[in-house]
Length: 411
Image (cartoon, rainbow, N blue to C red; front, side):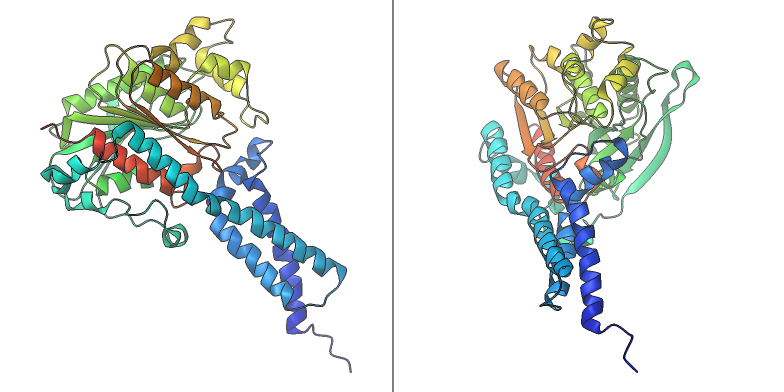
């Protein structure tokens, strides 16, 4: 009787064909923007797991090679796996050049030896965790295994305000040792309509393990609450932090504020107000800065429907509520002395296009303010949700150093 079971090579061929098609489907989102919201996680995540996709595509290629010569489908799958390999390796090949550009941008604004005074000061080593900053901007082992995060003290769900009876809470992350630390206020994104202090918790834990007290805060949501309610809530959080600085081991004279997307807009607005509470630096990850222009020039494709998000946040269109758009746009506050600003943005961001941080960066520089723009060419909006991805490793490496420079003790 003939052997009806497929041979090992035939099994490898079938698996290789399947993997080649899966690998290509996932890899194309490295270069193709998500047309609808349901596909947005693929557009965000594919570049950040490109090392895994490279392994997937290379495995498909190797399995198909074992069955050569083969049929037409096998050769087509082999070609597909090659395309997948090219797509998935593209971000990895761009890392060295991107890192050089980011390093140059940091040194141009802060000086070539900007870290030397920090390393020379005793405070940098006061917490043993401060010496554990990322030693390299990208580590392929961390990309596969994850970035190690030491244990920290975590205090969740602390109410800092209750406007209109809405309980607003924050989470606090502190180094394991009792002490007095510089503080970072972290504001989540979510289109001003969602999100929580638990978002990006790995970042908060990571920074706390390196010698910072991190306050992850929230705010009231649109459309129920229109701007400036969200800004008022951030300011309430800062007032609470000032009042409880001793209790939470925070040096109130060394505070930075960091936000992502909508949270980045709120972070910049908070830091740029004339009567702002003392803030030493502001960090904005992929945040909007000119809301009227963003409304009139929405991205293509537009998976979040940017116009509807802005209308819900501000209460109408730029023609209907022009003052709201003006007041809510950080770019309108740059013509006065401001804290140093670090802008980090993905070159492929199809929610907040790269032209907006570029324009804000130029405006800040033209007005004499210290600003740094770091662009990650392959990255999409919310790239740092993949904490160990290539984009976040680069962003984290430079964020650490910017914070160490900005929050160093004054001699």
